[in-house]
Length: 424
Image (cartoon, rainbow, N blue to C red; front, side, top):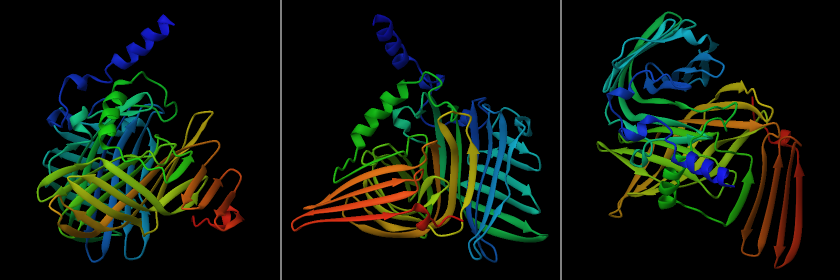
């Protein structure tokens, strides 16, 4: 028993990374290569050039396989065409970082160069070229930077830094036709040591203690409904939004096995200031079943902090889907499901003034699923009416029961998931 006590104490005292003794926010040392288990530099752009487009792209390496990945997806929002231009599972040496100052990456013909607040990026693959200059209009933000800026992932950790609002100018060439564009962008840099194949690898506990304190101060728990599902903290809901009034948001939520215990954060860039909202609640209004996963495609988000944000995030274009099989006897695969869409809602400030909001968003859902696929049991109560919902992708069933006490009645409903499935 003493050995167990010592081990637990050791785990909770162990620093996750040397950064604990350094800075909590971002500085120039964070720009470049960190030699971590995995790291990526991501760019999202919404722009107009003879049509309406959006781009999401990342330079990434990971040492578990090992491999390098170039995520490069162009969405034509007028025709609903999706250009999947990525290059996946390449030799890790394909992604190269040059120099010691700023970021200077090459990935075959594609590259990223610069340092805050200005970057140049060039993506080139399959007869499509996009080159852009990215100028930060907001400061760099580290998620939960006031609590150390380190996020846990299983027994690993990571650091998540981003710029929520950038001005973008550039040009695009498709099939030899070149057009200039202007737009709005988002930039992020993430690195850390965690495993998707074996999430319990490592010995990091301190971030959980620091994050638990932050979550407790911002918690937003409701028990009108109880939802237990296989959604787990190894996945996430992510969105970036750019509003017509010049504001922008970054939103991230980590699913939990109990849906009414939400963990999420939202940052609003407003009039030159970045505001953190930690009192998050969300509800999935619509979604699709895809290869044993439930993917929310319309999400209602309420965020409380310096005022209240109430938003609807909706994918409304054909998605780009990336799948990666996992080397685990229990975890089956990882899926990224992303699509452009729209965001609309209101911001109620602390003085009681309401600002209507509407604009573009990019929504990305990541799910790490087990061999049991998606499973969900939900119990709801509305006055004297109780509802039970059971969904199992493995069994291919959706089962609903409604029990009314006054007047007394019972209704059953049974269907197959394939009857509801809208996946392509």
